Structures are given as structure tokens and as C-alpha cells.
Image (cartoon, rainbow, N blue to C red; front, side, top):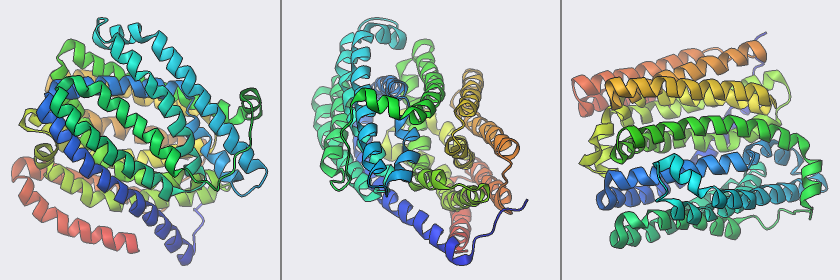
Length: 478
């Protein structure tokens, strides 16, 4: 059955809404990038690849612990918050339950990280010299419990401006604190900087949380009992997230143990540039996409939303990816230093994979919106396994160029998996022209990669950027 057509007014209205969300979070990301450039550049100069690698190992462990302990409630509760926000009775009850559950799980995670800090030190570094660091960083679990509860409520209630203010203030405060700490204490400042960063998140979540959103008082037992559906989906999502983060953690530790912490730092530089500075555009788009998709009921409506989101993502990302691939060396010069040039092949080749990542994530959100937790576990496990199966041998054989190739193959495989589920399990299709648009965008990215390695990045940029920018502007207006 062909997807239901939207009338022109509805299409333009949705496009305007998506671009408005992108504008809000795009502005946030620009401010965050400026702060990150300052912080990352000075960190690269003052603590070097080894310090950046150390921070990556700590961050990887924190992320693994946070996502595992909080049962992915920051994702699974968004649909319920979105559905009940206009209900004067159910709305406050859901808000109260979300706050109670996520914050309580944060406290539990704090205790667990404190107790298991010796094991974490041995797992990550092969010795017990980092026990104190992990004990101190266990406080991050409390911060994250508070921050995630408020950020989740803001997302569910479509309060994107408050989320944006929180993110900007956190970025500015973190860089103002990190610069002097890195200057005076060098690599010893890694743990304090991380602690301040997460602490500022909580502080500004408290300051900017919407005061007009009411929350009913509820006990932990009651919240747990009355929200089994959210918790059930959250459990499935947690297993999926744990598998993904575990795979990432395994690869980082593999580099740290089999190679050096410098290898981890170089990898982290490339990974951050691809996933954070380019991938953040899709993250900005997804802030309003998931709640909107979750609120949809009809299959045809979900088809329209997914296809429209992919279309916007492809047009926005196409010129960005071209610029990123062609200017990879400049990005390393600005953000890091020449010590990180090893990551350049990873950045140039891997940049093309961002397009598959954006398209596949749009489709994968359908699995969550449908509440298919077990199916989500299967897709994320397949993704995590393919990540390790590709990354480890390709790195051993081709170094950082192998990671770039692996990134493209990883997300191409993930796209094939989620699209198969989207088509066969849910019986949905992408609208006419979307698959062609994805292939075209990827083809342009491959031209950028080939041009960068043959005629040079600047010539390639001059040839490809003007037509892709024009096509993107035309496509977004169409």
C-alpha cells in the first residue's frame, strides 16, 4: 500500500517545526562547539593524546554505568510524558514517577560504582591504581540521575528552549573551569574536569527546569508498580544500550591494553569529530522527532514522519559531510594538534558513514515507538557485534584507515538490518525518492573522499560544496 500523502500545508508545517528544532539545537551546538574547541584544543596541548585517552576511558565507563543503571528511562518514558502532558491528572502523576524513578536509580548507581571501583580499575587499566578516581567519579551517577530526570521531562513536554539554555550554560561553565585546571594540573585535572562538567549539568537542570510543569508526589514503590510498561520497555532498552556501550568499552580497553593510551586518544579524537561534531546535527533533529513519532498511531502516519525526517537529515547533512571530509585536517589542527594526525584517515573515510547512521537511526526509532523491546535488543546486539567484528581486524590490518572503512560498513549493515525489520516486521515503506536520496548523498560523500585523496581537500571542497549546498536549500524548500 502506498504511503498516505500529506497536504502541502502539513508538509511545510512539519518541515518548519523540524527546522525550528534544528535551529534551536543547532545554535546550542554552535555554542557548544566553540566551548569544546577551546577546551579540547588546550587539553590536547596540555595533556596530549595520553590525557585525552585517559578521559575517554573514564567517560566510556561512566556512560556504560549510567545507561545500564538507569534502565534507559530517559528514552522509554518520553512517549508517556508526551501522551499525558495535556492531562491535568495523568500528566503530574507521570512527571512525579519519572523524577522518582530516575533519581532513585542514580543513587543506586552511585553506591554500585563506589563498591565496584576496584573491579572497574582492573577492567579498564589492568591494575588498581585508578580506584580512587572511580570512587570520586561515582558522584557523577547522582548528578546524572538528577539531570536525566529533568531533561527527560523537558523532552516529553516539548520544552526545547529550556533544554537548549541548560546545554549552553553547561558548556560555557565547563570550559571556564577546565581551562585553568588543565593549565595548572595537566593530566591530574582529568577527574576534576569530568566531575565539574557533570555537576554543572545538574546545576543548570535545576535552574532551567520549567516551573509550570506540575509533579504529583509519589513513593518509589508506587511509582515502580504503576509504571510497569515504561519500566518494561526501559529494561529492554537498557540491555540494548548495555550491549552497545560494552562493545565500545571493549574496543577502547583493547586499544589501551594491546596498544597504548596514545592510540586511545587518537581514536577518541576521530570518534569525537565524527559522532559529536557531525552526528550532533542528527541528534538536534531527533530531539523533537522521537516524541512526535511516539505520538503517532496509524502506520501510514509513521511512514510519513520517518520518511520526512530522513529527507530533512539527508539534505542538511549532505553539504556538512562534504565540508567535514574535505576539511578533516583543518578540524584536527583547530581542535587538537599535529599529534592527532593519525586519526585523519578515520575522519575522511568514516565521514561518509554518518549518512547511513542518520538514516538508520530514523528507522530504528520506529522500533522503540512501537514498543518492541525484544526486537530492539536484537538489532542493537547485531550492531554491537558487527562493530567489534569490523573494528578489531580492520584496525590491526589497516590502522585508522581501517576504522574509517569499518565505520561505513558498520552503519551500512545497521541500516540494512533496521530497514528489513521496518519493511518485513512492521509492513512499512519509505516514501518514493527517499532511498534514491540516501544513495545520492552517500555517492556525493564518496566523491568527497576520492577527491580529498587525489586532487586535495580544498579543490574538492570548491567543486562539491556549492552545488550540494544549493541542492540542499532547494530540497528543504521543496
